[in-house]
Image 1: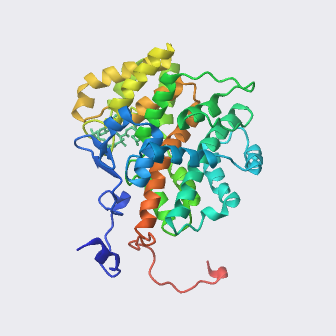
Image 2: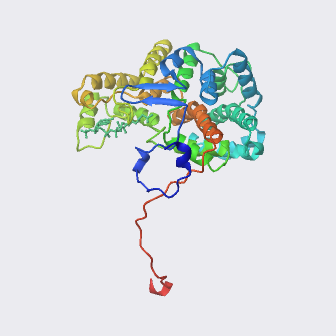
Image 3: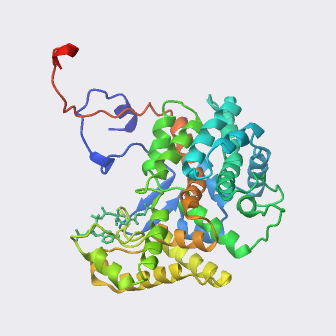
Length: 401
Ligand code: ACO
């Protein structure tokens, strides 16, 4: 049966599939994933080639509009994003209202939602032009909000970007500019960050992306859908895993740095401990993103001359796991989160910001999936259930309960 016919079927058999492990929620032409063979492609282009040859903004354009941009298209896209990177001054007051300890993901989700009040025309987007305007607005403002979430925690003044810089470099400057305005650019860091963002840019119908599509299917608007996606990404079973890796490594260090003890713990079936950053639900041979990012991690660590006992523990665990029969038998390899946490840490990004960095990278994927869903005029997402509660009961007055 073709999908258009299926759309009209409302009286079919209701199936149940916890976690939607075997249920396709949509047709999509954006990202292809083959977990057995370790293949990841955006719009048909391999992740390896994109990470090597394209920059993050080109990849964002590719994901959203379906083709790699030519020079004019890329310049216009970047210029439109820059034109829309101003965030209303009143949003700063909202940032000021958060406690310094607020988790950046909560701040980001709230601020993205708050943006709707300052950009009401971004809600009802029926034409492609209106969609485009909403897209360049969120791509312009989101890096500013992410940098502000960091600066608020760090007690630094909230800054705007520098239009003369590329998208990623501009973001790094907004993050790290000192109160006196100093920022030293490092091409190795910028390139590693660019790669990390590309590798995180889309991963088909994961939890946050499905959330964006389902919220967007009610025509709630792009910003509201992205805000919901950020909340979904926050969880430790999803985007929060990169934070969990570094927290685990720090725990091992504080306990004396004995990696063998933790390898044994991970293999002990009576102990719930798992080696965070190892294994993947979909990739059972290797995570193609991890291969790319491992190389970038090595380059960044070398370039920065990083000497950090936590990173030594990471290298030790990686080596031991790759040679260990338990891990080999179960095809447990370091995943992208293992290395991304290591890079973020060596760049001086605080651990609570790791998931926010993931959100910045995933933004183009969320946008692309939302746009595809709206252009295909998909119906509102509304799963059914198997009811397991009480059958009909007569009402009981309060004195008899
Ligand atoms: N450490 C030790 N043992 C592990 C690990 C690990 N990290 N991961 C899986 N195993 C073992 C399990 O105990 C199980 O062993 P058994 O067959 O003897 O019972 C076997 O490997 C298979 O594990 P499952 O849980 O069935 O594998 P699943 O595909 O469901 O889980 C997951 C994948 C959740 C990623 C898992 O490997 C894990 O918990 N990893 C650590 C957390 C992590 O890094 N998450 C980030 C994933 S990447 C991302 O989301 C972007």
